[in-house]
Image (cartoon, rainbow, N blue to C red):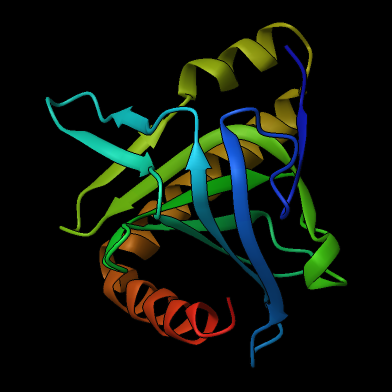
Length: 179
């Protein structure tokens, strides 16, 4: 187990055979990317664990990423091929480097939160977080910070999830015209 370094470009990704992607800075300074999945080897489906399955990537669908320099979370919203918001996935990170939208990146710290179009909230990969601590990939201080931030983001989604969703939809509407 290791901490994965991820880029806004989301490369390499063997599942994605053809893509179209644009980058820009949001009015509030966030790094933004819209990635359209033009050709995939297969769709990516997420099991939410309560009998609900959610598509995370399919041909013609989009990932809108939004991140702020120095923050410890990264938003990735999925829009279906018709442009409908389906979910936002929040990675808890070791700090974002977003000095440029084209080169924005982060270290993934294992804890993930999903907010669906219907307002459901899910926390994923807590087992990976515990394993990372047990294997000394992260220390107790980082573990506690990730747990605290996960709790804070869940509370944020409960009160302001619809505001975040509206912000992501607005950015999507702007970005899709740039493709």
